Image 1 (cartoon, rainbow, N blue to C red):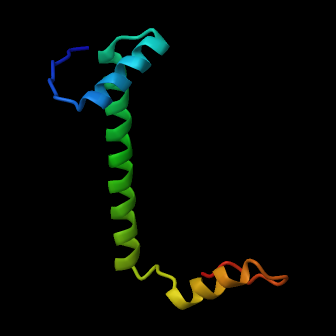
Image 2: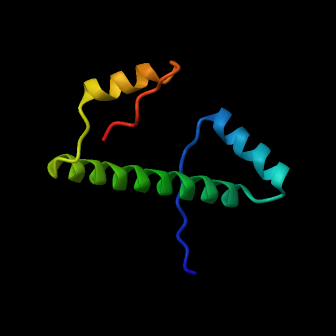
Length: 86
């Protein structure tokens, strides 16, 4: 796999935490940073995908009235909870 060097200035406290994890896992700083960055990018991609999915649902009219959701939530602590709104 080809790689590219990327340089970043980190706050001292964050850099020290990277060093701590590198020592704990017996890995290089680069490995720790690569894992963290990959996980962050994966999470951001998932949030973006879910946002687009939600917007498509709104455009298609697949929404649930806020009042129905609030009524359902309020019923969850009762002896007779309402069915999940649809």
